[in-house]
Length: 166
Length: 363
Image 1 (cartoon, rainbow over the protein chains, first blue to last red):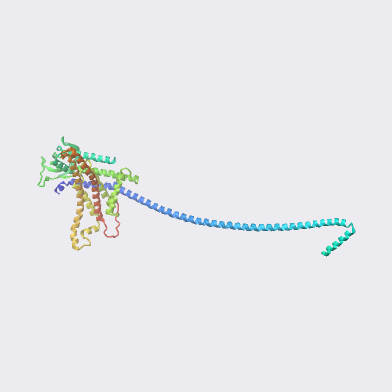
Image 2: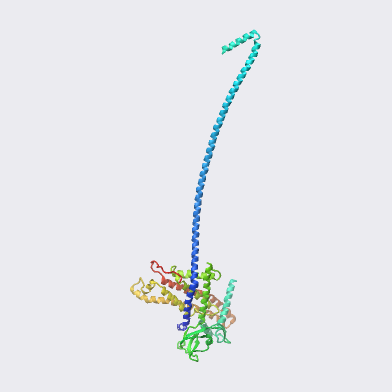
């Protein structure tokens, strides 16, 4: 203890005090304050960056969900439209078929009518021609037949038969 | 390769240290037990000139003188070279001074030192503000700190992440802040004490490290230095203490009134023992380190068989040297950590009331 007291250098104590005070003052101004402030602001910057990244991530997720929803809606709409289109197509086809059936029926009917009319005309014509032919034939036959008596009689009889039969 | 180079650095440091230590005595070869003891004592003390090494046979010293500043009937300033490494008596305006055991004493013209019963000189001592070896080292460390950390601070003006040596310093600053200041003082109030804690931490560490170099200084192994450092912590603690702290000292809540009265002197003593422990711990650790390293180095000089003693001495010294390198950091850490702890105890809020809007700025 006595050695310690004897060794206590007041000058050393004094200078240590001066040096320490000076160092604290100078380092505070030129080193610690700027260093700690920059470290703080850097840490805050990093924290903010992380936070905003988190927010961006969340927004991204929201956006993705929104997109998904919109896609879902769009898909629904598309299906709806497709269904409607299908319906319309079917309707059109059905209508067309019906129309076509009607029309073809009409055409067929008309054609049949025409055919009937033509047929009638043709039959009438044939009848007329046949009548003419038969008249001509009958003339010739009559001209030839009436050359003899019996034949004339016979014809008159026959005709009478026919009339009777009628 | 890395390990090898580190080892070789230590080895060369060791060789240099031993050379510088053992050539410096000035009284022939240092080769006996008592001479070695004297030499170690001499090393542990302050010195008025900066001697790097000296030749014991020709009594030549290599180094430089430092200014002596005495206040003894007026200011007296002269060079330490006039003491001629403690051998000469200096006459300065009618008074005679002589260096004895690294201290300046007032003597008669013949330079007689009267040893009292205790074995210490009874001569008067002038008020001595000399720039001694230790003071010069403090200045040197101060300049180094300002250059290093001023440089780091300037770096932040240009970039947010430092490059080069700043990259080494920044984690240390962060370490003091995150591992020492914030856990002990608390997030709310630590900023006020950062300047002191950082300064003390790096000052003690660097000056401890310099003590391990061939410069052969022993600053923190001086009781005056550690006393000054501890007093700073003491005053900062007392002046930043809040009402709760004083209440716990002078009127301990929650104990019977008789106990309150008994506790007052104990608590007051307690405030003093804390810085006292700081002072002794740093002083004793560094002094012990220096004594052991030097003692192990001197194995070479007192042993009989140099071929056997030298490797043993080098090995043991190297081993201890590495531990001492750790101790330089450890003691700086402990001093700063305990300072922060004491400050933290003084500013702690014991009740959970709203913390007043106190300034939490770096001041």
